[in-house]
Length: 173
Image 1 (tube, rainbow, N blue to C red):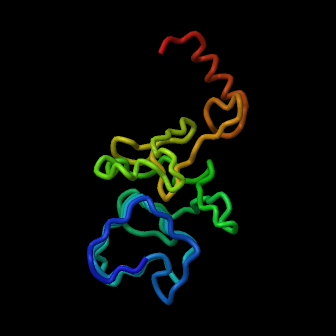
Image 2 (cartoon, one colour; image 1 turned 120 degrees about the horizontal axis):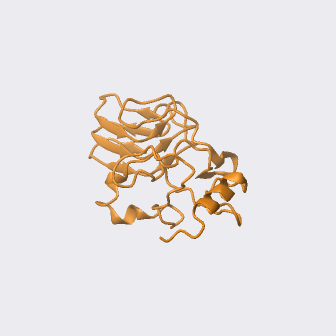
Image 3 (cartoon, helix red, strand yellow; image 1 turned 180 degrees about the horizontal axis):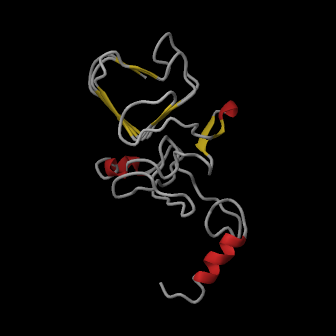
């Protein structure tokens, strides 16, 4: 992304595998707001922002970035070599975004695949912020495509699933 003037707001985007002389992911010259984004695997650096006038929060930036909720951890893409930038179930970006930005942008209720962002994976702690602390960073929301019996959506059918089932046996909802 190149921004020389204006004040863009960038939300739930993924920048990976890009290259530039500086700012492989983002080259930002004017005030911008970046929230719930992933910038990973870009060269020469993730962000070039000479005036430090950009507010970046709840984003995963390779090499780190100062700001509330930001991470510096491998986002664990499904298959970066095949350009599949969806998150796998071990990603630190799952359930780690700021849901407070969602109500003002109804179009952002869906990920790049057109699937809803309002998916809470119960087996993953909600470390995000706002009314929906379980939204994911980046362009894709982890979708629970669990196998039969995988009650907690951790992609493994095991004793934990049986324990959840038995704890809820005959429970009225």
